[in-house]
Image (cartoon, rainbow, N blue to C red; front, side):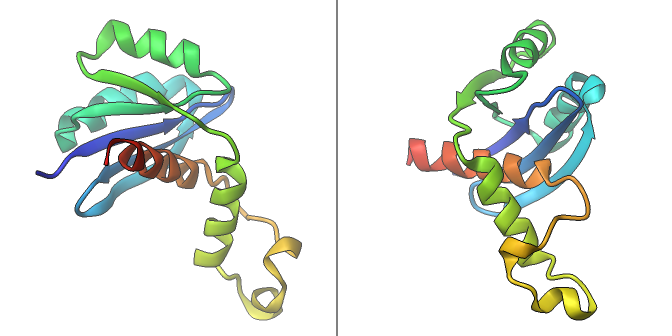
Length: 133
């Protein structure tokens, strides 16, 4: 049976969010202001029929877990975030090769032009699915 999770990469200023289906992949992803996180998570969870919320276990996680615990009836699971930002950076740069001469530069020499916290959230969802398979 298909399971849908909402993954959150919490941070002090912004948060990455991804709604991910085990069978269909990423259904929605975005980067938002940290102050909007709880409201957005609740809205997206209801809209997409989310089964549980997956949250990275590092910066800002305890605050967001506590806040969501007061307003959401969904199970909240902390997932190891170790090296997820580096993995997300590489994925972002592979999926967004740049324009002109920039696309010929090695990934190590390129810098993302926008926040990629939503890619981190996708990776957290994948880690959750791998842990329960």
